[in-house]
Length: 222
Length: 186
Length: 214
Picture 1: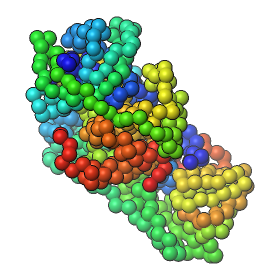
Picture 2 (picture 1 turned 30 degrees about the vertical axis):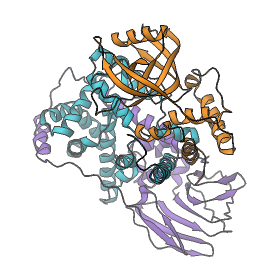
Picture 3 (picture 1 turned 180 degrees about the vertical axis):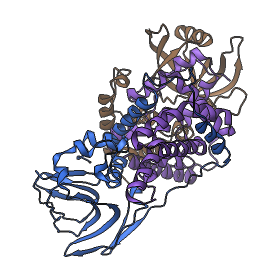
Picture 4 (picture 1 turned 60 degrees about the horizontal axis):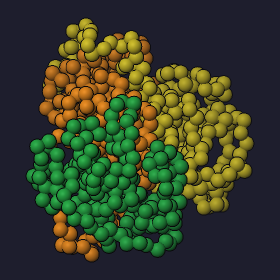
């Protein structure tokens, strides 16, 4: 089934909340469909929590530490509210393009998706996230179409949401997370048509690799 | 027949094996009795009646035991038959005993494509889970009844739902159910 | 009635859970406080949680935002979520510290987004749903009955026995294990289970109305 996964560093940064919204949403969609990555993210999250809340230097319950009075005042403030958060099942969004209707994954449900526009078999709708050089879109390709190639100056992520496509490396299925940078060549075609989420960056500095990209809360991305 | 009853949330069909760790005095006593006699009954804890146990149970025999590194007693038990539980009493050690009657379970079944696929999937599960597989020195992946029994024990649905598979005529329902979950089939 | 002496074959859950279950004494206390907040809106319990988490969150947030007032906002938001959402925490899913961490991470994520793009869109809950879909589904599909029962037993056991029993898991697979085994998304496995249960229910009502003596 799913054969293409985000690499470890991406999963780690995702779990720590360090990636921009576009990539976080894409990984979230993959993780929801992929038990393996789901498990790994749980582990990374747990490690992070341990590091923050339970490492050796962290104070133990047994030794209450001094908290400043500003913080303590917060307790009254917070507990004044008697209500409990109400849980509602999230409603999902759908998009229609060329007569096909797709239900969008949870991670995209609150995002504003623009109108589909396209040439030939390829239609694209921008997802407006206002992330500067990072552009996020939905791409729908009709049966028999080719997926347009990008210049790959920066990175290009394609997450297959529905349908299939294939290139000389093989066939891709929903949930496959395909990360390309400048080194790759590919000519993906789809026989039955597909819907993808793409996250593309033209920014040159990304070619320097992940190092900076993955700095915790690094300012590069925003 | 009167047997000791061990209330546990364990669903076991005939042929099923599970490992129990025993450390409470009354259950050690039960094990002692069981080892030299007729086994005991595992019955699902269920709120409602006087002793909070279900009206049916799995009659098990001890097939192996060992002392763990923790000094506790581990026993492997295998279900022989399902039983209906009648009158229950509690003895001075707080151990429950009940009058039980053996119930028929599924008759022998012909293998077909579905049962074969379920057998293969179970075989894979055994390969991937050596601890679990180690309980079964002699797995019978070719037997539809054996394969379905193990799958129903493993499958994560609640006990009330699993309960309907204890009836002798429920095999086709079981196959239907498992095929829907395990094999892509709608 | 106390059900001691249980045990079930340990299964192949990740070592992670083992660690969570056995290691930290703090976890029990924190989980108990969360339960008190959830069930009794207990301010003293919340104060316990606050004293444990708030200073740590403050310190972490300060490193990330380099700004005292934003750090305080993270503390305020996170702890206020803990107060309002304590009933959504379930010990079966992991340590209380992990749960609070995910809340803090979400709060920080949304806050950072607000700072950088001036948008108040709060995507974090869609990206990392605190309440997973199965929480919503529990009414339809209470598959943790067994686990809940065990946990209920555990509550009644003396402390030393609790420790012993807690190291063990259940014969039954978890939904996650089944998903991993079948190499399917968890969602697919859940919907298959639902579908199968639906069919079963139909069969039962068609064939067995009134026949069952339970």
